[in-house]
Amino acid sequence: MKKITKILASSLVAAMILSMAACGKAEETTKKKKKTKKTTKETTEETTEEPTETTEAPTESTTEESTTVTTQPSGVDPDTITLDYNFPEAGCAIELAKKEDCFYYKMDMELNPDDRTIGGHIEFTFFNYSEDEWDKLCMRDYSSLFIDAKTAGYDQALDTNGALTDITNIVDTRSNTTLEYTRDTDVSVVWIPLTENLKPGDSMTLTYDFKATIPTVADRYGVDSDVFNVTNFYPILAVYDKGDWSHAAFYDCGECFFSYVSYYDVNLTVPKDWPVLSTGTQTAKFDSGDKSTYTFDAPSVRDFVFCTCKDFKFFEDDYNGVHIRVVYNEKHPGSSEMDAASEASLQAAKDSLDSLGYAFGKYPYPELDIILAPIAAGGMEYPNLIIVTDMAYYTTANSYEDIPYEQLGIVVAHEIGHQWFMGIVGSNSGMEPWLDESFASYTEIVYEHYLGLTDEYAYYTRDMNDLTAPNMVQSLKAGDEIPVNRPYYDFSTQEAYISAAYSIGKVALYQMEEILGRENFYAIIREYVHRNAFTNSTEDRLFEAIYDCAGKDNADLNKLIETVFER
Image (cartoon, rainbow, N blue to C red; front, side, top):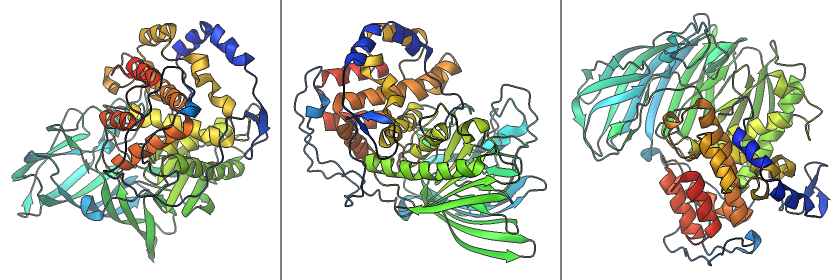
């Protein structure tokens, strides 16, 4: 999720004042200028060649890879660092998870716009992947949080017009037993006791009906200006991890969703000819009376969501095997420039797929949808679909931008970055939020570099703001912004969390890139992605990949990790 205000830590600003000597040194450095292909803006010679399509490489590393790394002293030129490791190639393929390794949701649902409800029947087949017997299940029912503004995470008084989800006819098909459920104080936490334990390695099918009420809010889940953003709307199984079900408290700052990779087979009925953009690929559509039913196939994803509006205007194109669609509500445009902003979003999507696919592995799905809609945040990511604000600040060209709709493009890049970091590589976004938000923020830099917008991230360099400098460390600790790798719940303020997850983590990843060299760092993250694709990863797995590939004897890298992450 991209926060609507671009937040840089105030401590970074303070530390910048104390780092004038370093700034002066950077300004004195003379570098050859050149024009880039993407823009007429001048950039330094450090820009690498544009990503191009490459031969697909295996999706997993072999056990015969060499992990020997030349010892690197502090201050070494990153361009001279050679990592002796058999990395996946730039732009390589990422294979989807096998269907038999996924949970399976078969959904038959209907949207009723008049009473703002979405409901239907779900058949859910899953297996116990843990070493413990399960005597109960934990489902997350996020829609029920919108019974009022406070439980939904809003600070201000707001009429959400939501309701508790009606969950009925819960059946364990192993014995055709009807099950009951209870809710926690956090109404999104639903417990279902089992009459027959589910043993490790065994599978079962749970069937249930539900009816959720869509709130009247301009948010990632809600309806506003006739646009229905229908996300996190059905009861979904929580993740069982470390001997317990994940049921940490919901928060609205960023995201706290955590789920297992699943295969979705969906029938969705809406008013006739209302277009639907969703997770997965549409495989059929048929009309009956005043209704249309769409069928969607969504393999290897962590959730199913959709957006619909009878007045969507479409902008479409194909790029490198991916069909991209951008839409906005033509009857209620966010600005007078929505057509141009939509075209800019389409181009930003292409540039993001190219640059991020080159760096981390090719986007593995056939479709990507972008909904420009009235939402309170800058954007929000879901599998194969992102929602981006249509607010005039973003959808109007500004004279101060280096290229038209630059800020809009950066939001698009951030949310598409989440397709790799939270989508392909999952994590517990409540307990380790930096693993997706810091990485998605770092993908903004990858995107900016691809476009030649090098001035946009010059502020993050070690010359300008070294995160390991004593004055910087003092400022960051005073603001409770480091260590970055903490649960959302452990930060003293929401501002400290936002700075750490969205800004400081982003800068730390970029400074790792500086230390190791851009192509080396891309290769390391590509290896991390391939090791952990379609699993729920942890920071231990990330640092294991970094040290396996780069070794443990790079003094600058070690100092940065020890300082920012306190490992």
